[in-house]
Each structure stands twice: as structure tokens, then as C-alpha cells.
Amino acid sequence: MNKDANKALWRGYDILDGEHQVKRSTGEVVNSITVQVPIGTIFYTPEQQEEYKERKEDEEQKKIRRANNKPLGEFCFMNSKEKYKDVSPQTVTRLVYLATYLPYDESCLCKWGGKKMVKKDVERVLKLSRASFFRFWKEVNGKYLYEREDGTVCFSKDFHRGRIEGLQGRSYYQKVYSKRVRELYERTPVSRHKHLGYVFQMLPYVSTEFNIICFNPEEEKLEKILPMSVDGFCDAAGVVAEQRARFIKAYAAIKFTVGEHEERFCSFVSDGLSLDKARIFVNPRVLYNGHSWERVEILGAFADYKQHSHDIFETAIFEGYPGE
Image (cartoon, rainbow, N blue to C red; front, side, top):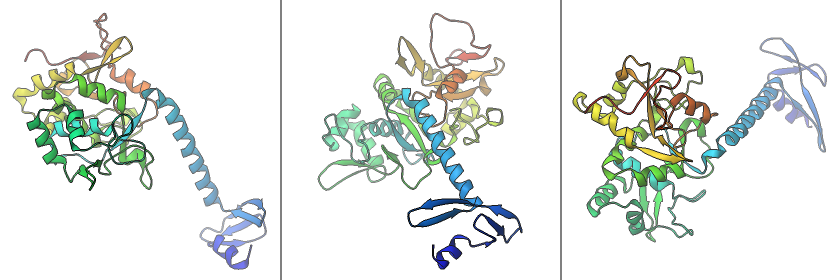
């Protein structure tokens, strides 16, 4: 190693010998790691060693997370920092559904067989009336969807399937799982697309680890989570008090099939004393980017086992407020 390169590598240190250096800022004598390579010897400072250790731990955590979440199936990414308030809730739902038609590492929508979609294809896939599709297209054209010169329809960077380069994937994007999103969309009446959309608009408040709607979504300790109540959720969604019972009850009908049972899109978990203050969990089979989706499934108790009428873990799980 030449002298100039050696100075650059050890900036901030005085070299005592090949294995020991003095850190100028503290006077501490530290050890380096030496690695023999074909062109000579490379020295790694304590800071470089720590960076390497953190990088390896992060890579290991990613491997564990991928393995744990594999049962959830294929997914696409949705920008979780965007609130999508510039479009209606039902439009957000339709965008999320369309994102499941993104091919890997491409922005243009594709039908089965790999043929790229044009505007007419998008209209057929969404299964909307002509008037509803016109309103949808007017909202998203040039913002979230755009047409290329050849007529093919592509997504903006807010939706993506494939590698996320140059961004903090867990912090800025949520994983949305294709199979359940499609089933939800296809089973949910058009009039209730807005209910799905209200939740998708709340992505900036969905806990990465626990899928609870809260005020500190990046917190990794359950006991420190600051949950948003049903009242808070309704306030954010713009639902007036007189309509809240009907609004919450509508979520009871939004379900999908898992094996031989059905699960709810959201669960409202109460201590049994005040349903207004119930906590809202989003089913991790629909969206999740944490380490243990099964833990979330236990916390949220999403399964709708009709043969069981008792409370789960003495927690009140309800399908809506009494009455309408």
C-alpha cells in the first residue's frame, strides 16, 4: 500500500505499529484487523469493523424477515409516507389493486401473459362503470398513472414491484400482498371500496412491526406503541359522529378466505369497556413489512371462526357498534 493511500485510510489515527494505532480525538490505543490480499495488506479501523458488523446484522435480519414472511406470497411496494389525500379513498383502493399487476422491476402494467396494458385494459380490470372509471382516470392521470406514447399505462414511483434502490425500503415503503388485495377488491362491493381506501390512506400511521394504527409507527416495542383510537381514525377519515356506527360496522363485511375460514381486513380490539377507544389492527396478510406477521395475527385475532362465540384472550373482538 502506498504512503498516500495509507494516510487516507488512517486519517484521525497515529500508527504505532502494524496492529496498534492511537485515536487522536481520545488518545485511545486501538487494534486493527489486517487482511492479506493479493496486492498487499488492508487494515480495518474500529469504526469500519463496527460498520461491517452492523451491515452483516442488517443483512441477516433481512434474510430472517424474508423467510418469515414468505407464506404471505408475492408483494409489491407502496409508498407508506404518502397519504394519498389528493385522491378519493376509493381511488386509492383501485390504485393498490392495479399495483398487483406490476411486473418485476418494471413500471408498466401487464396482463397475464406479459402483454402490457393500455387504458382500455385498465378499465376492464377495474370492473367499474364507465362514469366511475372516468372519475378515477381524471384523478390519477399524470399523478399516479401515466400513458406512454405507445399507449401503455405505467405507474409513478409510489408503487413498485422489485428492488428498491437508494431508499430505505422498510421506512418508506409498505409491502402489499397481491393475492389478498385482489380477493378483497373482487369481493368488496364498489360502494365499499372507500372503506379499504381509508385504511390505505392511513399507511403513515400503520406500525411496521405490529400493524396497529398508531402515532409512532416505527416503534419496535409493543408497550411503547401509542395507538390511535376508533374515534381518532374516524376523525382522520372525516366521518361525523352520527355515521360512525354504520362506518365501523361496514368493515365487518370486508373479508377474505384463508384455508377453511375467513379473516377480516381489519380488527377492532377493545378492553371490553369502551369500544370507542378500541385499537385498530390491519391484517398482515394484506400488508406487512415487519419481522413476524404471525405475532400480529395473534394480537389482532382476525379469524372469523363462526363456531366460536367466546372472547379471545378475554379481549372483546367486535364486528361493529350495536345498532345502526
